[in-house]
Image 1: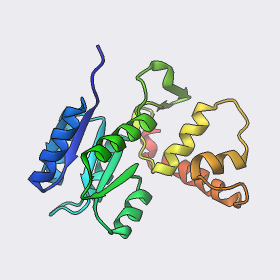
Image 2: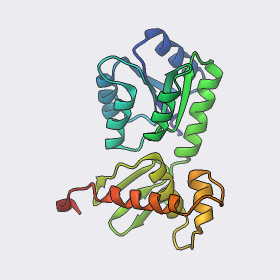
Image 3: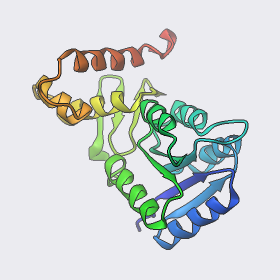
Image 4: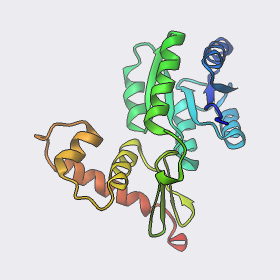
Length: 214
């Protein structure tokens, strides 16, 4: 029997949480809520949600900090909830690895549509065929989870998209123009230094694991 995706909604406004839970539950999602960053981290550890909706502006711990800590444990997809017009927050969130953002106030229809869209891009159907093993590295293409010697490797959104594309095309020769288009969404006229820099960043992520665990 198929289990519906579990959504974790995090916001310090009770009204927003009620709206999110009502709409997503009506659409068939399972929903858990948290009203603070610390509660969100505990809930994520206990419930293992499939996607997180994080309000950026919260007291004590911002949504960006919650996302950073979540990504230390897994590659859970994240949609940031931002105040209308807060362009800087949107840009910073996407640069730090958020999968999408939703500006308040938002309609219930847009909320559920964005959740479904992100899950389609990042989760897909659960299948062992979508787990790639390369030496001591395990890449779970469905869960967006990367492990080396059993240790989770934290990647930025761009690093993950690059690795995902390479892993899905293992054994094939990948042209620089294709990587620029698929990963960065850039034209072929863009300099090759962009993809080269991305590969260096991705390689550097492996070195974050302590030498004793390699």
